[in-house]
Image 1 (cartoon, rainbow, N blue to C red):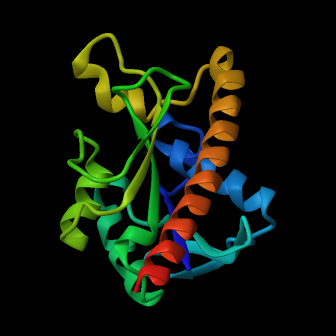
Image 2 (tube, helix red, strand yellow):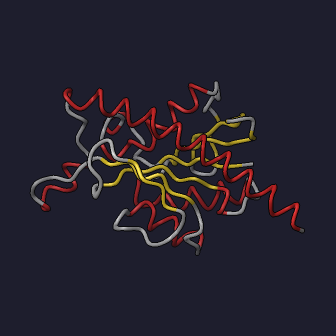
Image 3 (tube, rainbow, N blue to C red):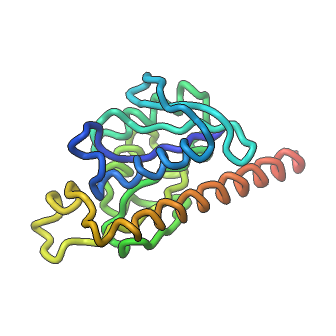
Length: 187
């Protein structure tokens, strides 16, 4: 079992904001793999199915971004899952729009949702898919910027980012599964 946790803020006013790119990617992944995300528990909206032939739960915390750790902790516990089997998808203002990076562990790089998850799980040993949303020209505009919707001129690039992130998630799941099988064979 694997957990893909997309970060964002709940509520219609945040649906298409930069901060919600994690939600948008998990929703698109659910649609592609026909996973219905209609269950609500553990401070999350989630659904389970298969991605790349692997049993996977897709979830969106119903907490605000800065409290994502509460949902992550409850989902990991309810699935009886090691944090290493979780992929967190989130926005990153330090990356240009359209740029995606994978991070296997380490600090939160200022992303408060990731910080909350590290604190709640007491580990940084989970994978993050960092999706660039750019940074505002003035640092004091950060909150308004990440809570603003993408501009019409950015939507094509956002859609490309979503597709690229989905491919990276699928590839990462295959790699995690291969590594798990390799460890089992060594034992």
